[in-house]
Amino acid sequence: MAHVNYIDGADINNKKVLMRVDFNVSLNPDHSIADDARIQQALPTIRYLLDHGNKLILMSHLGRPKGRDTQFTLQPVVAKLQELFPDKKLILVDDFTQDHSAIDNQQPNEIIMLENIRFYPEEKKNDEGFARNLSTLGDVFVNDAFGVSHRADASVVGLTKFLPSYGGLLLKREVEMISKIIDTPKKPVVAILGGAKISTKLHLVEKLMTLADYLILGGGIANTFIKAQGHEIGKSICEYEEVDVAHKMLYDAQQKSTQIILPTDAVVANSLEATEGTVKSVTEIPADGFMLDIGPETEAKFGAVIAQASTIVWNGPVGYFENPAFRRGTDFLYFSITYNAEAVSIVGGGDTLNAISKKEYLDKITHISTGGGAMLEFIEKGSLPGIDALISQSEQV
Image 1 (tube, rainbow, N blue to C red):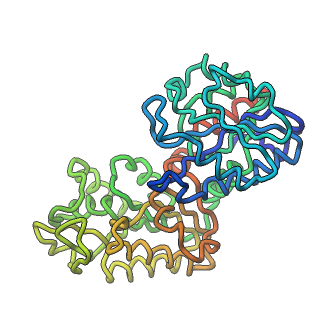
Image 2: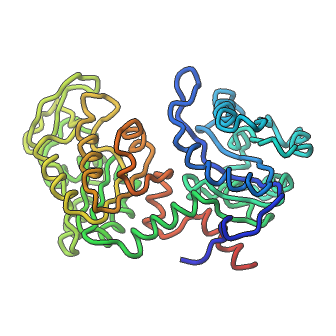
Image 3: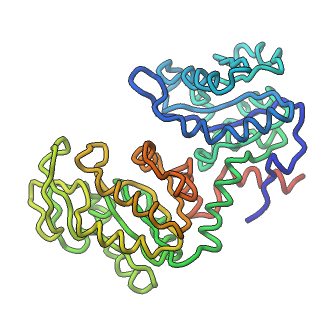
């Protein structure tokens, strides 16, 4: 892969640093932070830059606001950062386009956070004028937001046109770890794909069939393939318009050396709110039934494949884990991966991280990616718009 300039290989001292972070954290109903993992993973870059005498201006989005919407304020993030940096003064700038006096007068002991960058419609449009205006706030741009680097947004891509630009330490780790999977994976490679939709992951499945020896499918994605095998799936989630595509992929996998591993039994219930289900073979799903988790036979089959893996990539739960009655299969996958101490394992995706965030043995996972869509797109395409923008600038230097 072409070269990215990272902060630990550059001379960035006593500068005003505009830093894109991914602090799109999950919130509790009272707007306190439910899981601060994304903030924690950016701390090494923040501390590195502060240790070199730089003043930080942080940028992030939160949620998907339609314009300026106070329920998506970054105030809870600023409160968490204040806890983590008690010797610093954290300042939230409400609208830098109207008043940037706090930035102009920033003191060495102050960390500034811009209010939700997606409050500005120009952000998603990668508006050049908006990026130029943003760039006037700092001397240097640092992208440490791997989780949004698949988005060609102004604060991810646009700023590289106007400021010396570098990758942060989290971005560096993400790129290095995922590149290993793509470029020099230890075989056998096991890829596990769950979640609801196959349509958004068609190209990824095709890519994984060139990389993986075994492709384990669960969740709604698997249902579409089970339907393609000719089985009735009751009321289970399924993309019926993709059944023919799934059928072709099953055929293509046979021509390659990839084995697609599908569930052979499922935990079935009559509603998503059910408190328990019944184990059924995938050949006998009732017409009014929902497949909401993998069954014990499937667990054993998936577990045996994971146990022999040397490289594991996992994205997406294999059941309706939001209901505790149907999270056993996803928990089983997690513990199977952590039990394989010899394998290099990479786990990513918002739902996946939510499913495992409070688990023990997280240190047994080689790399927990902060990006779900970004991780998958990086595996599929070998790069991302945010990384390409950094490469483009480093080639001009």
